[in-house]
Length: 162
Image 1 (cartoon, rainbow, N blue to C red):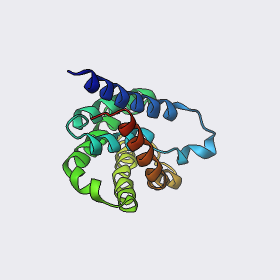
Image 2 (image 1 turned 120 degrees about the horizontal axis):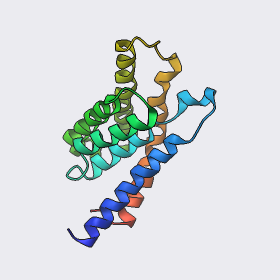
Image 3 (image 1 turned 90 degrees about the horizontal axis):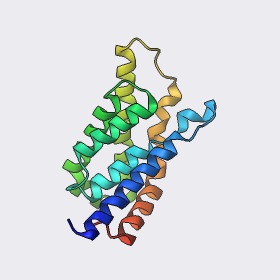
């Protein structure tokens, strides 16, 4: 493995770590429903940019880490992020050529998988359903996607993660 390849992988891992740390920042109760799915958007970007490196396995591992961090049902986020990664890897050539607004809509659809599966898991475990604002998070992700894309693209180019 070349040093450039190792450096690229290191940079990708750092961006995942930053997204996980941002997710851990405590928010007031009123702001929690608006917390963006940072780690999912970073996964979508890297699976689209480097589908040969970041795929279902990376999504599964990231999901297990999120499951532990959020004390959610074991495997809940692992399943969701694996599905997201699989979808992005399969469609990366199409998603890459979309204009940014169309990518944002695609990202929103992918981000809806997470609350959908979480709500399903809550129903299975007889927990109360989430409040309606819970479903607003993917819209926040859609609005943030252009900036996430531009920032991560700049990181990818600056550090030559190829």
